[in-house]
Amino acid sequence: EKLLSHTMRVSSFALSSFLLSIPLASAWMPNGLPLSRAYAPHLTPVRTPTYLSVLASPGGIVDIVKDEATSSVEVTISATAEQTKEAYDRVIIDASKNIAIPGFRKGSKVPANVIESVMEKSGGREFLKKQALKQLLSTVVEPALKDHPDVDPIGEPALTQSEEVLVSLFKANEEIQLSVKCDVWPTIKWSSEPTEDSKPYDGLEVAYSRKPFNQAKMDQALVDLRARQAQLAPKEGDAPALEMGDACVVNMVGYMATDAGAKGEPLPNAASGDQVDVVMETGKYMEGLVEGLVGAQINDTREVTVTFPMGLKDKTLAGKTAIFDVTVLSVDTRTLPEIDDEFANNIRPGMNVEKLMEEIKEAVDAEDAREFVGVRNAAIDKALAEKIDMVIPETLVTIQAREKFALMLTEMRDNGSPDSEIKKLVSPENFEKYKDISRDGIVRDLKASMAVEEIARLENIRVSPQEVEEQLANLKKEAGDEYDEGQLRPKVESTLLKNYVMELLTDRAKLDITYEEEGKFDQKLMDELMEQTIKREEEEASKRQEQVAKAAAQAEADQSE
Image 1: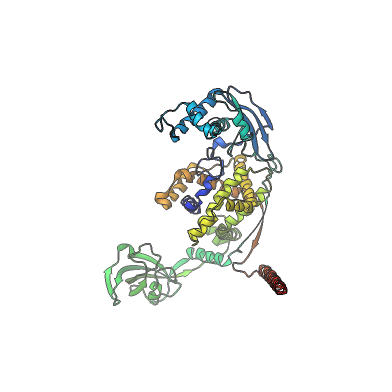
Image 2: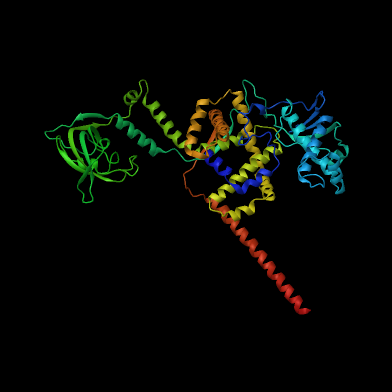
């Protein structure tokens, strides 16, 4: 649900559209694809040597130099004479569509020398060459990088040569060499190399806090378990009457209650019934049912007024008052078993009471622990990131920061901030500030994300197509018309894969769990906040005194003059 909500809200937030203009490798990052590459075969990590010399066919990559320190490559690419001519011709055609030239209809084909002559008069001939170089970047450089097996680009290529020099060297119908630099996917590097017997992600030291074990919930689980194993026997006596704690079998015929409290229309058959088992305990059934049967004997028919619960699936009955004619067919006593080995063996043959208690405790605690899975996984991510020794390229940091910044703005709007205030935050300058502040956390998350994928590969962990389809079907029901399978599928696959890896790491980790009561007063935190408040007030008071002193000195100086 959080994934779906995040996806739909971010995609619909118009104010964050400026983020899309931040230079990124959109040609190589499919829309909606998360930073995970587990389901993008074309983005499989490639180990490249520091320097690669590539025998070039006419046109194409000449050589590659990889900078491990920045996870980037510098590539020299040769554009053929034919390619430079095609690029320049395209620029001339585009220019002819936008320039009014005497003697030619706008949009008609204009000879290159005429365009050049017109542009030269306004100093624009160099502009034509610059545009031709941009054409070469998109039609020659980017495809060459994308298709080369030793380059795995994630950033837009940037020319390393001076634009002025390239403009002076560029001639249509002549070969030219272009040197560009771009970020590439980093190669996973563990702090120690994984072996069959020793893996750096085993035994992670993970510390986090959660609420303590819920003993009351376990006690209730035992009560419920004993109740299901209760032994029934006919109640002794000449005319046994129902008491709280007994059990009975009844026939029930129901009617809606009128405003006057009388019987009205009959209830649907599903609300009535024969041979109904009833345990005389409050809270199990409709309010008023068991209370109305106290003292009833076999063959008695009681008129019992009840109130249907508000949470009833049948909304036509939820919260309504009804009247039942209840005929008692049998009256039994209930004997609850002792919790011992015999009781445990009845639950499952061969189980003793110690094992039973252990399993119940684990089940109860697992239910509570699910509430803190996110906290636990965040702690595992932090510990996992420390096992990764590699450089995260700037492009990946920018991509992640862009998504987080857009989500922050969306949440601000959802929390009631006016669009006018949010719009003030939408600027490249504010984005850069946000990225700097978030950088450490983003780098840590990216390292952990890449480590998760590598662990999945090493441990041969896979997500079954059936699970993915089930999750997508659920999301489709929630999303309705806004469902976008192309955007959600890779996110679902990535999320399921991470869940599997997190469970594996949890099983192998050294967990240091602090159990804290919810809402517990944190004296240390309050002392720190108080100390910060006092310090801030003292600083403000000092500033005010300084301002007063300056004003007094200025007034005295003015009087002297």
